[in-house]
Image (cartoon, rainbow, N blue to C red; front, side):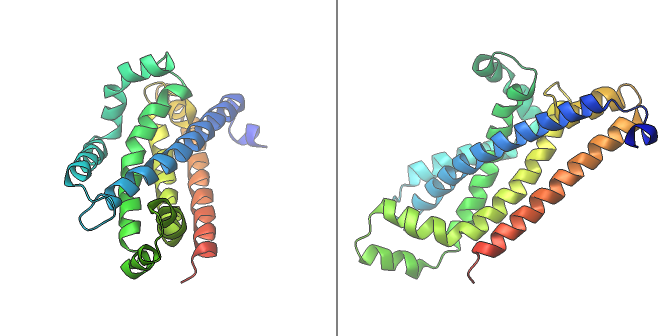
Length: 222
């Protein structure tokens, strides 16, 4: 049926590009979630009046986060090409896109984590301190559980942004649906391929948003 409606589409290439997009997005979301939480915790805990208060560390982490958040993603990919070449061994393909995807998204999510942690009632943290809770206990038993709805909501937004990043990375040979739309659609004037790539990306976005909303509602006890 689809072959008849869209005869100019090579469905094997579409399936391969779809798998590459899922691969890049999945790995980068997991890495971004972990690194973003680490960055967010550092920003929060080293801020004035908090457990690890340190103006130097806070300014250093904030500076790194602000720099990488400010660089447009397409430029970041180009800047990281030498690093990617050393790390992955190539500047083409899905694996080559991962360093830029993670480095581009983790600082963005880190700021969202910091904001989520700031919204936690200070009284809850002080109560844990007064009972002699260790820093690790406060992090795992108080901060992260209390902020979890916002953290899930934040990683949902970040995952959707990462899908857009993979599409941009595809324009310079990273593979995936972005590469398919650019190479097969734009360069060869095949609008059917561009349409299919766009529709699949939109489906991914809707699925991620729905899953994120369901999880957020299920863990939000307010």
